[in-house]
Length: 275
Ligand code: DGL
Image (cartoon, rainbow, N blue to C red; front, top):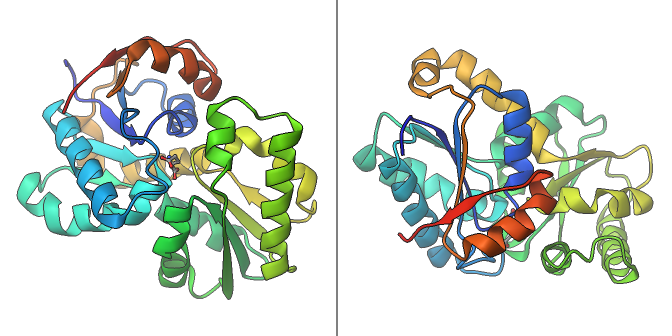
């Protein structure tokens, strides 16, 4: 790999919803997207396994010369990022950075919530990790008064099978949205805490009261990354800027290319890699 791209990692296709916004906001930057499709989904896996897989991916992306990695996957951000930042990075590559999607989302919530009552929709792994409530308290404790969560285990398979607009999807979206409003009928901000959920946005908005603000992460992560690079010019200069986009997957490249278009909105030509 030539250049020194920003690495974008996800358990599979979902992170392409984040990459899409990153490329839109930072078109001149080089990106290397890695999807661990051979081992997806992460959302139902244990802490130990998600950490182990994510660390392998981070080491791989460092070996591809990425000075900065964005973990686009909420589950990996929730279960592995802190360990990687605190335990692994100092020995592995102290001059490089690994960032996730939870902190930017939490900061955005603090900016926009009016009554401090927040809802989080995510995979079972993300919800069980309690990462969002913990991080919301830590970084937005002054404004966020309560957080309720709802695991939506069927939403990822519905999206991956392109069952986005049908009655089956409507049934499960409605059910999970109703559940979270039963937990707090007054929440005013709802975080879509999973890479796949923006693809269900039309279904979601059908069941969420119109005064509730729905946070899609791609745009937020992109805006916060711009801010981060402005505050860290030393890192910014290390990233190559030729507008190059590369895609790698741990599974079949053909399968990846087929499905990636749904998430990215443009054709993709990927290559298969092995850790
Ligand atoms: N990328 C994952 C996330 O954002 C969803 C897919 C999975 O479970 O691996 O949590």
